[in-house]
Length: 159
Figure (cartoon, rainbow, N blue to C red):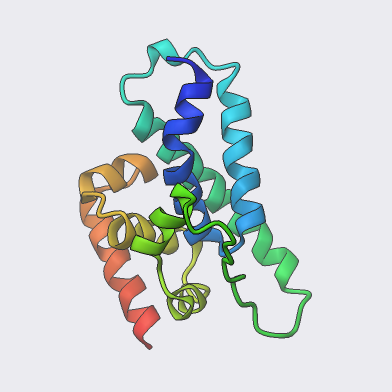
């Protein structure tokens, strides 16, 4: 399968995951583009489940970014709020996907209280209905650990 075809097929999903984890469309787009640039040099014929592979790549990149971005935001003294998405083209398929399944601005703000792993588990389970086995595989954790992480994340978000 060609990378261009994969880009067309999986970009909305990957962009949606990364935006929900990062709260910034520009940063989310950068991560998705980096993943597809890296995919150019990977032998994708050896990958059994390309969707899972791409989701794992985007999740890990977002976690790494969040860990480094936290240090950058420590300098800023005001509250950090995710940027809202504004669309001009209502017929854009990306707009339709986000509109149908968009996490509210308040949830994104609450998610800032979660650490990167909690945020990844929360987004993958609550927004995309991944099974715990899939999340555990993506994050290289046990299923029971992922359940506990989600439980703690929900408690943090509701506090």
